[in-house]
Figure 1 (cartoon, rainbow, N blue to C red):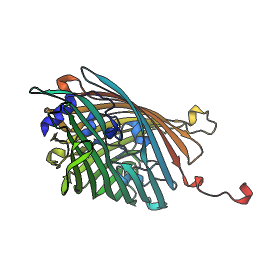
Figure 2 (cartoon, rainbow, N blue to C red):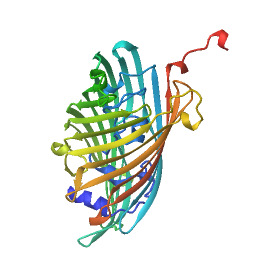
Figure 3 (cartoon, rainbow, N blue to C red):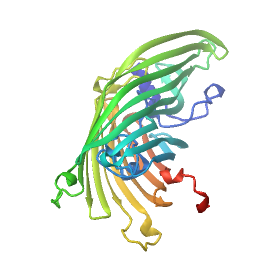
Figure 4 (cartoon, rainbow, N blue to C red):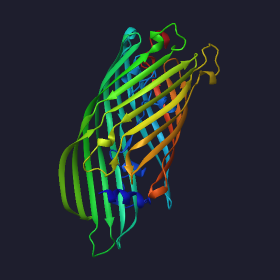
Length: 419
């Protein structure tokens, strides 16, 4: 089975591969492994700062740490979209790919301002699988064309509550339900009448639920007379280990017109717990600095019927800053904008030929206000993942994002006097 994974990377030539594979889209071959590429996004605001916002307050909905949602000023709805331009290459070939996806939406409803009580709803991607590769293979004198393709991933639906029992302690809890479908295709074409072509297609339905809890300590509220601790917050979140139920339908076909055999199987996998820490400091009235780190213990991850790999614990580190609008009445257009930038690093939760796949990214963006409670976020991210050595693949990409943020005033019907 591990040999299949090596072949997948060694045959890296992306092509159009026939009608039976047209439903599969091009993407990074790294997303073929495990559950696919993990989506760390918490919001477009935090994406532009390179962080997950584990300790970052503000008038936005945070989908990573529920405890960071206690300062919503209004009923708040956010929706985002990203466009990605990806170049994947090895020492012999390269391919440029473009794609667009909705990043999810989040909804926050504050109902008790004194204690920061807020209801949280979200619908966001958790993992993404999207790849299609094809190339010639010579295996001990047997030459054939190998094709590998996959698509799908997990989406998470969350419902939670955040609150502030005392001035400096912010707590949050939520329940997340993850579900999705992963489709995989493997096709070996021997182009020889004396050999039977091999065609395997599987569809894997996945579902499972888990809990998440978090805390953010506001040291400025605890030590009000201290300038050092003013506007300083430290956050922590924990995501529980959970069972992911897998139902697999697999079909084997020996020609493109007749079924040879099929079967269905059910099993459960243990998805490991995740946790993270963050620290945020606001300097003056305009500059916010924030950094966080998160971990997930994938070394014990042993999924059945997924692309084989050596799994390992992974880490994500990010830090960034935000420049708020100048606090004065007569501001120019540029003085009303919010500016953000950051850097992030994460290592893969798998190894290929004993090597982890490192991912680096820089991001930046602006927040454009429409009025006091509504706005638009515009952002860009430049990143690189992997390398060309040892038959691996290097991904270079640019992502452009846009997010719409609507406050409660957007939904209020004007009175007759205001029309």
